[in-house]
Image (cartoon, rainbow, N blue to C red; front, top):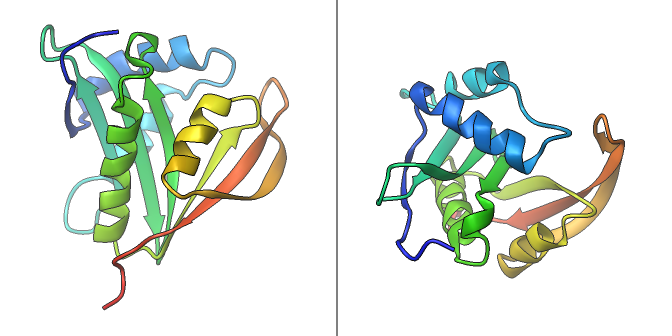
Length: 162
């Protein structure tokens, strides 16, 4: 595990290639495409932004060691993706990325955040549970081509009352 703390910043188009490398390493069977990231980033800037994408850089070498994305529509947000380099597992980077997304869900005035997580990804499920996410159902065969089920989890966002 790297001892230096990663630096979070907004994801930009020039980050897509290094994020894709990490995406393919972490999720070889159901990786996102470059087009999917381009589409998400197109909705993450400007006054009508409804998405938040962030990367984590290793300050020692500028390498991307994590990334995360959130989409919002109305008062509902959805965690689209979180990926953390295996060398960073257990160091709190996943928590930092999720905290950033939840802060933006509040800024987008969302009252709830949903996410899907592979049923076999207990490490991620435990992270989400620590943040207060609760299981609400399953999506059968959600992750393709492996036909792996997704656990759907929900968090009620605090501090969204006006």
